Length: 425
Image (cartoon, rainbow, N blue to C red; front, side):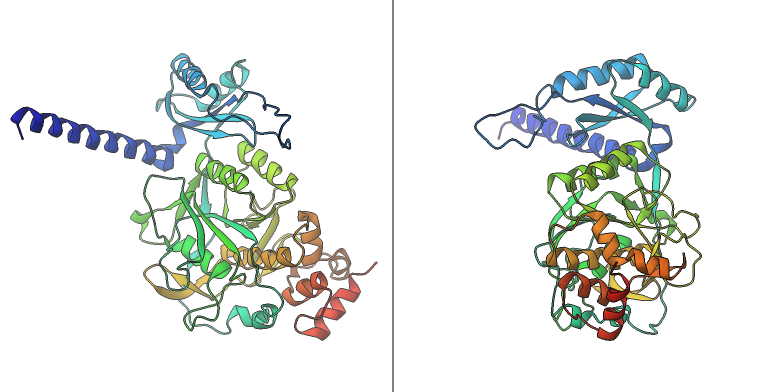
């Protein structure tokens, strides 16, 4: 090979490496390195195109005008002293969402206000930071939580078969013995890496969807659900623990993907400040009949966002925390589950209580695929039961919920039937 060709190849390799480094830096910025200086700017997508030759559901052409909207985003960034970091189509809301970064000394509130008044902008907001609601707690088990729900008896009636469940979380160890082959779809909305295995996402995934009857580890609540692992959060490795964070943008991308995939249940074992973009996506999901389960922060009266959002099933651990009356309680302490590195361990936190309810909802949706979110809530915590306990904490009874949906005794029959009778008008 000639020296000239070698030189060209070397330059190309350097160029590729350089591009990879630039892309990686952009991903890190979007993930969280400078979230406190970022704003989200939404630009309108073109109207849906009607085609008389097909059944019409209303869809946006994601590619139409993409370059034009990118140019508008760049012009807006230049005008307001910002830098465009990334962009993502969100057809569920009829917008393209762009992440822009402000200088360190800029007033984000002032920038957002001015952008919101610009006629080219559909809406604008600051990027918020969220965190997962859990911590590792290596304690010996007192009693496996699955036994409280008579899981083996429930699985004789329903296993969540074919129900599409999306977990929005940190990365999942898809090669774990209890999860291998159980993850139908894995996507990373934080950076460009594949197969990122992180503690929190792996633990939540095991509770929801670990394989049953394989001779190892645990059995998930919904072991035959069609499970989607959507990485929108990242583990803060430098802290040396399971602390993990997500941003408005990464969460929004994952929620849009879940909507595109027509999921039936979404697990959000995380919490943070109210966020307008995420609220809009949650409302869209709820309007489509998707059940959303959110982990309630025990340190906040109403459980915090997104658990407090209307229509979301808010869940906390049944380990004695004082929580609002409309927050459901499920097993959340010393829960055996999957760990990174082909291990198992015990975890504690609202995240894992929410995972239990997510799996239970998948069981119910197999039995009654068209259950609306409000019907799911009534099944888990009937109005008659809530009135009977007079605002006291409502602990989810999986046997009663499955019995009520299946129309037959599932397990713990005397208790299940008593509760079913009390819920009748």
